[in-house]
Length: 352
Image (cartoon, rainbow, N blue to C red; front, top):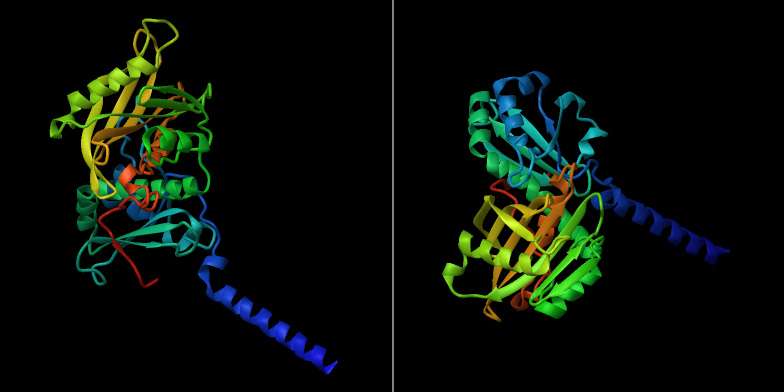
């Protein structure tokens, strides 16, 4: 009996130790963040939210997304007074805290912290000595603020794609291009061509699509708008026909932008705009990345495009855009499948 008592005491001690560790390890006790993708909660005094400084921040968040056929704002916006930012609301996934105090702050700046009240949460604090400085700062750094939350959401998507993705598309990217690519699991239909594949969710109401193709790299002149769009139109005409012989996919060049970006610390070209079906009424937004495969001296293009008539397209196209960042070229195959997208020019807080 004495032996059993010793065992029981040991078990109780282990349970107590486990509970202590559980309470000390915030990752175990914190709830999952609430809210939907691209929702932002602003924690700011009610009266300040209605004054010019608050309106300046609202106008930044209310900016339309480029490259869509109809206006859609960047985020769903909600606001709460700091006194009401309680244990129910403080687990929201994307939070902006506004702090204006001339005694506490000497300059305006941004800083952020992750997972403070919930898992997968990010809180961006904008602090300033005055409302005037605050308004000037957010207007000047509007792109930084937008990109911070857009890239945060895309990084969340990339982590989800690591866990669950379309095996079909991953296999085709590997077999046809010796690359790695992760896309949403619902993309299962496909068509193959020469140095090209088109995959789709094949949904009648909101169809999301991923294309991948490659062509020889011919030097820096390869990366200009005319060249990139000519290549796109050539591949799409050959591989994505309409319902009749004279119908095929083309690019609306007047509504398309081509800009240089950095992906995995290397040069890439982002193309964003509208596609349409020649001699038909179909169309929608697309976004693509063109990258140089130095091993095979070729340009590899991954593109996402959406067909969703009479539906909002913000979430659909951004979900596909996040997938583009998972592309690993042959020389990157042995590295991490997808690195985080740099989020913003904001200082990360280490003391929580």
